[in-house]
Length: 231
Image 1 (cartoon, one colour):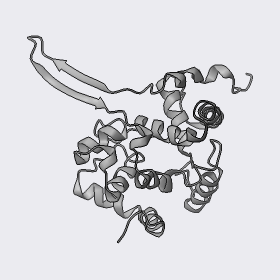
Image 2 (tube, rainbow, N blue to C red):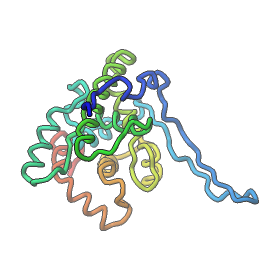
Image 3 (cartoon, rainbow, N blue to C red):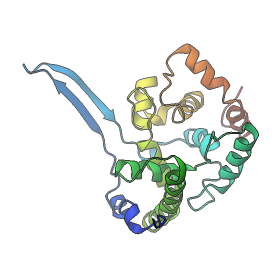
Image 4 (cartoon, one colour):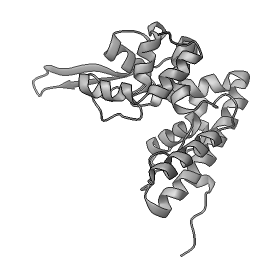
């Protein structure tokens, strides 16, 4: 059998970004057979890049991709760090994917371009994500120029799942804190940055939140040193 190759057909068409934002506000309404509304809620609130404070951005970048502003789609430093952690722990715990790679993964999943991630297929899929991430960076650079990184980051936050049915940071900010993203405090931003890697963990449970918080000592220390949060 011939080995798989990464080809243009493996990726969602980049033209979908010409219709940005392709993630829009969604309302979910469920009614009974006699017309009584059982559920009526917005499932996603779109947030513009202009409404994302610097401290919100840093809370995620310190955790997910500290070199995001400098690379062209592939978080090489994150992969080196992930490899070191995996070797120290003797098992695959993290892949070191950066913001654009995670966005590529989410878009590919949404468009049905995600096979099983185990074994050889998983390696091939990772290569596809890296290639698509690089293409996304090029597309956004062409479309938005110097604002490309901010637009990529905003798209990432609008697509990320924050647990408890909250798709996108706009919905997460509303349901967890009753606020718009632009009103989040640094500690609240840090709280939300803990969730994408642990979407199945209910953060409103005190015990779960304590575990998540204690696991982020390095992130909190880095944010403090950068002056994003205070003691």
